[in-house]
Length: 180
Image (cartoon, rainbow, N blue to C red; front, side):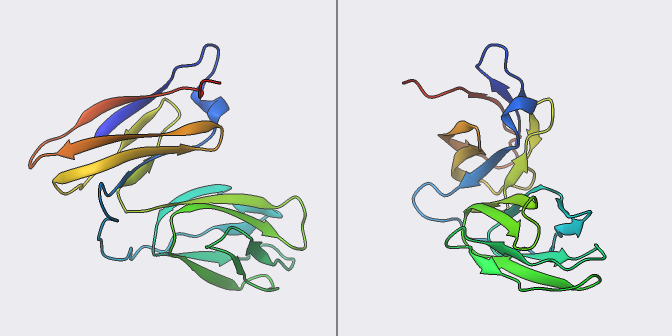
């Protein structure tokens, strides 16, 4: 599936909205899939999280290496994905498995300015829209899905789609502010 996200807002750009995650969820029940093998990393470098935003599938282990010459303590109060990795020095890494879909805000208890965000998608069929709004979600099995979006600054969207065998679905998604 390929598509393009457009903003239905005058004088607004996708860069102003921040990351936009496009993902698939089940229509009547959660989607079944094998746990992701890939273990992405969120580095602690120059007293910052790198990357500052990461989208992953539920069930993913995320490595949290400390690349700084100083100690860090990465934690989150975002339930039900809350965690506290404890204090650890340069050269060490800890990991966290994120089982539940939703937003996870991360911080360092030592460095007040350190913060980052993870978005845990409910399935491995997701993409972060590029700077021009394009997205590509490959390898979707045929079936009915809820196509959803998440963006911190815009309301979520949802619509039902069907992927047929051999079909490459192309669509545009318009995101707008909620009416008062």
